[in-house]
Length: 405
Image 1: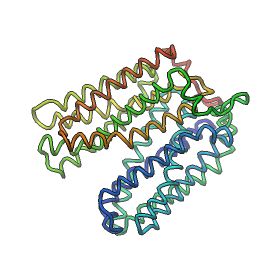
Image 2: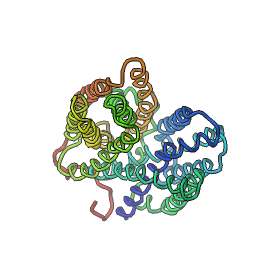
Image 3: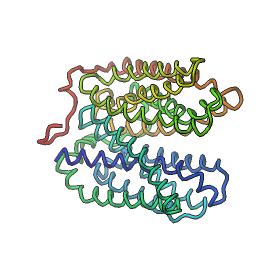
Image 4: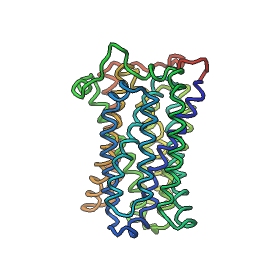
């Protein structure tokens, strides 16, 4: 039963990644068809992020009231409806309207399933879970490419993904008894004695604010690397835009493959060690960007940065129940996800301003500052909470079923 539920959770995370890369793939055609400037993609992205942040912040209250299975099923359904709305839209304002339920659904899936896996499965599954998200983001551009070139319609690309989400939503609704039987409705919820924490109570938890800031800095660093890689290769190293666009995608390959490998490392190594290792590897990749030789060093740098990013995000989430307590984990992870999306929303624009006013060459410096902050905040969180990092992997939480996972 536990293996079936884990497989379903993996599929849910593939579905979470699918829509994330659709907008970027469709936008070159989409914005001309609906008659808006190319910059309006930023408005849509910001709207999705804002709705996702709101959903993450209230995920703890929803979990306590309805349980993990029902919230996941409803969130996937909400995303499916929103994507269908995208598929029938013919104006920017319709897209903006549908971006709200899309963000709300995505935030629910993200925060609820991250918490559930952190509580109930060994650490390797958290890395593989986020690897599945990478699979989804890698597949979606091919779906949109098929829709654009074979079906001559970006709307049908969204329609295909919405149908996939509708089918998945039906499966999750049908599987709600499986969630209950496996203990998902109780293991991922606060105990009967515990109430849903208010935001004031969450931020008063020792070390919580430091952990949220660490998440903010990490997500800012990751998105900066992916968003500005192509521009850096073009403007700093003189590579053609066509070539740079292809090579910049190597970052995503690095992070997806890295998370697959990290799952095996997590069987033997602690979360805190893997976070430190990830920071060290990202630092090495960033230093490669400084080398004034052939552009291949910069390309290798972005791949190495992707590998280094791989363990940081899932390991921070997985250590949350151990560091802050299982009864607080959903509240903590919900706010962590919110800070993650705030980092995604704010910091790339901040560096964009720096790049425009000063130089894109400052990207490695900006990244190193964020890396230093991540490392300092990580060590302060462990010190403030007096967290211990078990080397015994038998101590890692497992789902309470007859299956050995």
